[in-house]
Length: 165
Image (cartoon, rainbow, N blue to C red; front, side, top):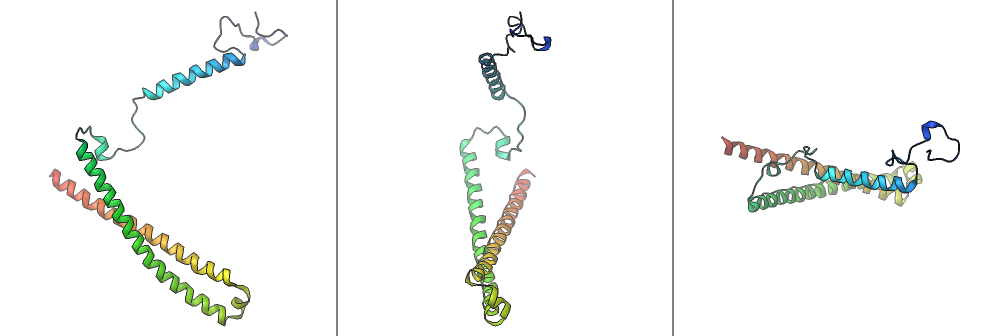
């Protein structure tokens, strides 16, 4: 018995009683999709494959001591805050210097060079000065944060190697 009542090629005729999983009716496809999603979710929960991410030394071990884990996490937060604060301070210093270094020539050129006087209005002057200032802040802050982080990681590595020896 064919699923279609009109003349259909044999490749589209499915026996409903033998192939109930792949019937062509939407309600059956909906049920099949629900079942497949449920099976996939079950496989996801039971997955024993290794994670894509590299675990930190704390996560790699099965530590039962929660206080030690909390202490290490607090140390990480404190180091991150110290690096961020240092980056912000250095970025502000560099931004101040960049602001002066771009404001003085820009404002001088607007008053003395005829082409600049005719073509750069107040908005253009502000964009030149603030663009250089903001770019300098972000570049210097990022470099300082990365440098601080590298230093702290190197000291922590040396400490851990000294403890293992």
